[in-house]
Length: 324
Ligand code: ADP
Image (cartoon, rainbow, N blue to C red; front, side, top):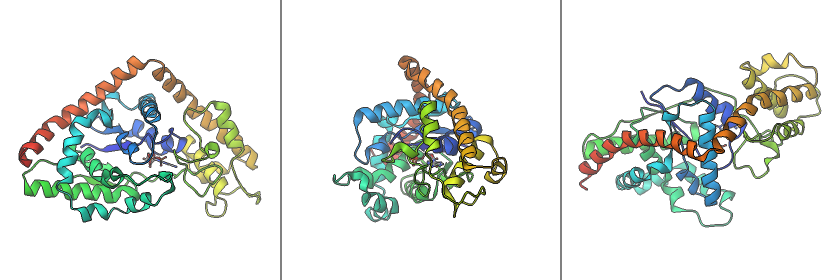
């Protein structure tokens, strides 16, 4: 049983990505699960090539430093020789109208992140590339949030269509809902989710932030003037967010942790220390890996070659069945 999960290097990794995804992958991942850094997906909106490359390495180092088995991790672009042809075959099995129904494209193409530049065809076709990511590896399950469920459904449709039109080549994947975890929100705008590509980094706790910077950011977190120490996400989103971060660090529920404090200041101090404790060792390991590029390349090749091996046989079957 293979589960496939990805994370896009569209910005530096933050504590929400870590607590909500990476730490769980490291703790719960099985030997047949796969994790990849989806750098090709990071090209669908304006980006800087050097930043994309360095963030890809940083993210790979973060996944390894977090304890995910290196042979289960790969970088998407290392599979480009296989993903390119497979994406083309799938594009030629996908109706224009099917791709045009993707609600994420409608939202993202109206988004401000395009910085005034034209919307890219790659943003339109990226769900087909995502189908290729999934189908190339023969993934059985793809844990995704609501925003991606429609894309996994497209992968299912394309897999079934290919299998019935040209011959059996693909495992039909299932979208699964990842275990509910807190959606960590921005510290300065606690009604928005913490986001890698937030324009203002003041409310985002990055994995590679220095401990003092983490402490300063937590100190400046927006709370409220009620002075009430309760876990009430609707009325007190800032405080609730801090409690959620603390709870995730301590493996408890927010209601359990709130009982131990008598002021917002105490909660903030506790959050700052918990985050520093959680992230500082991780940051050190990431730094060590980044300081040894040859070692990181070696690790990268281990997972990349394994994923390419998994894909090679399937791609040749697909091309043969497709008549090319
Ligand atoms: P981002 O939205 O920060 O660019 P991604 O969409 O690449 O992050 O998501 C990568 C993983 O991190 C996903 O599994 C997602 O559920 C998780 N994740 C992202 N943001 C948060 C958050 N604020 N709180 C908890 N988990 C998050």
